[in-house]
Structures are given as structure tokens and as C-alpha cells.
Length: 355
Image (cartoon, rainbow, N blue to C red; front, side):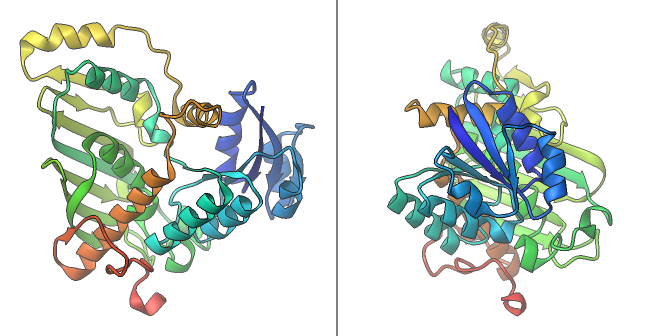
């Protein structure tokens, strides 16, 4: 049984539901939040969960194996490093760090402690991505060619009433860092490492400091191309992905926060191969979805059966792509990846006036 301490009762509420769905593998022992009343409400009177306002209480508990950091972005690295130094594995909400330099700090702390960091990218898990994985494994997808992504969500005054949101000091970035990052992770999972990025960012929807719109073009190391359209000014919340491989085209539905749980269409480029695709899609898979699938992969990794979990390197790649997007937008030119120490914005994504 893996003992868990959740730090932050906001998105931590959803994490708790995921752990409870895997009660044979996880036991949540602590819920830490500065708002004790909110933490108590989220715990729902569960006598097995202790409530505190101080992470030290959880770190003093030898039954805690995993610390789940669900705090505002500017607090992610300090609390993750504290947990690692206390000998705990860490679940770390996105974005894992506000810069590549702080990713380096995380990597060093994890190596020194001999512990793992699991970035939160739960969009990877669900029946649709399990189906695509099966088609790839069967050799029916072929090579990545072109993709288009839409992260078209609606965020207004109520959302930004939380003081740290929309600020460089609190969020460390805008829609690219805090919203589209999930879709970009999914894209890179299937298309591989980005090699070059160009981008235009704008603040058009809300009176905030950070960007809330973006138009992004990505070229991958394998030659594939992708475009990503991002706005927080849509009429509703919709996420769409269209992934074109040499052998088939995969098109998602429009579920905003769990695209892998919705219906996807998988269409063969060669119509004579469609029966093979349909036969694989007809096989039952029983894939765990969203946070449940994400936490199940962590349990497997900690039980020496790795392969499906999100790794610290995946999280670093997500921050590297965000960094390249900001560098391309501010510099008005294509930016090549991978980025190296000393690259533009390696130490901070913040504009000069906010550093």
C-alpha cells in the first residue's frame, strides 16, 4: 500500500477521487491546505485522512511514501524539493517548474534522493489513447505526418478572481503554460521530440498579465509538422486533436479535460486496411482513464513495472517546449530545439520587467 499526502485541496480534490478509485493500491493519509475548512470538506469526514496546514506534519509520518503537490505553479519546485529531500516520491501538478533551470534543480534533487517525480499529465490515459497505442503496436498507424490541436476554452472574470491567476508572479505563464500544456504533451507522446517552433502570443480576452491566445507551429525531429491553436475566449470548453499518420488519421471528439475518454475516429488511408483497424478497435481493453489511469501507472512503476507512467523527463520536455514557444514569440523567429543551458529564457519565462 502506497501512503499519500496531498498538498493543496484545490485540484487535490480530483486527485483524491483518483486515489480512492484505487484503494487497493493507495491510502491517502494527509490532506494539507492553508484553508483547514476547505481541506476538511474535501476529505469528507474520512477518519483515515489527517488534516493539517503544515507539510512538516506529513513528512514526519513514516507511512507517507508519496507527496502529491497540488499548489499554485510558483510553489511547485520548492515543495517538491522539500518532499524529495525527505525521501518521498513526488506527484507534481503541471507545470512542473517555471523554467528549465528549475527543472534542473528538480532533477538534481530526485537523483540525490533516489526518488521519482511524476508530472501530472492525466490526459494520456483513456480508451481512445489505449486504442491508438494498440493500432501503433500493430503497425497500422505508420509514421507521424501532420497534426492540428485546438485548446479552445472559456476563462473569464470568475476564473481570474483567484489573485495569483493571470499573473507572472503566480502562474509564471499564461494559456501556453497552464492550459495547452496537456495537449502538447499528448502531441509529443505520439509525434516525438520537437525540433523547431514558431509562435505568436497575445492577450486579447481578459485584462491579465499573461497570454490568453496563441498560434503555434511545430516541426518535429522526424519531419512531422503540427499547428496548435489556443484561446481562453471560446464560447465553451473544447479540446480537439487530429493526428495524421502515414497509415491512418486519428480524430478526437471535443471533451475539454479528458480527450482520451471521448470517442475518436480512426480512419485508414488505404480503405482496404480499415477492417484491420476495426478488428483491433473491437477488442476489449478496459483501460483506466484520467487520474485513475495516471495513478495506476505510478503504482505499477513503484512496484517495479515501469513503462506507462509519466516521467520527469516528460515533464522537462513540456517545459522545454513552452520555453521555445515564448522565445519564438518574443524574438519573432523560429527557435530550434533542444535548448541548452544559457538559451533564451532558460533561467526564467518571465518578461524582463517581471523578473
